[in-house]
Image 1 (cartoon, helix red, strand yellow):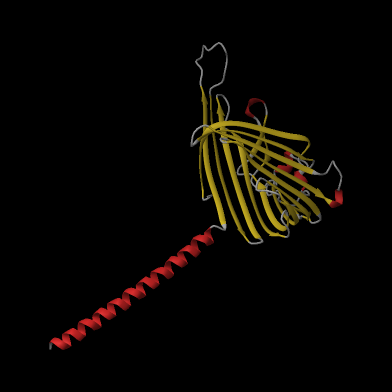
Image 2 (cartoon, one colour):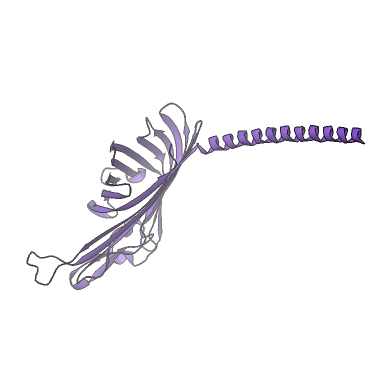
Length: 307
């Protein structure tokens, strides 16, 4: 009996030792898989930011220096996702901006309105050059008006009126992480005007033929350049330039240009001052150069997985 108990004890000890060894092997395997999974996520770099700014001014009835009571509110949501492994890359970016302002004696009006999305797949051919295919979209959220005397207004734009969807195939030059230039000799563009009332106040209808909602320009060239650099520890400069030229009407007058410049100064971890300017030339919209500028102080929260 004692001998049987001894043999049984030895058997259980051997069994326990074997199980313990297998558990250790399994743990090591799990650690390896976990490390591989961690390495796999390093192919992705993502960033998200959301901001809100508020401005308010009020004056008494006897304020001799003059002024108008006003309230302004602006918001921004932006995100990036960038994938890179070996020679392949996939970059996507989205920007959503909207702002309103209310001056005493006037109706609430927009101060900012933009929707922008861009996604690009690339294949690196050399240290600085690669091939790419991209799609970008540009429009706005709500109606835009031109205001006249006595609060009169005329509708001049709307969501998808206009809207621009451009695909591009070509080559890109990227010497560093700050600058990128895309040269797309084949860049079809779709221009949408889904509101039939736009043509009543904008006779050009943003280039879309009267009675139609879409214009397609199949043979066209697009240049797309970005520059994003930290000028100082708390100061960032971001620029984006887009040029579009239809081969059928290729000349300086009919070539579209758009330049966005954003300078962000960080005051604290979440409080920032932002200066944004847009310069736009598009003969289908206006014969002159359009320009907008906005300066804002507000809260900007940003998260990313950069290491």
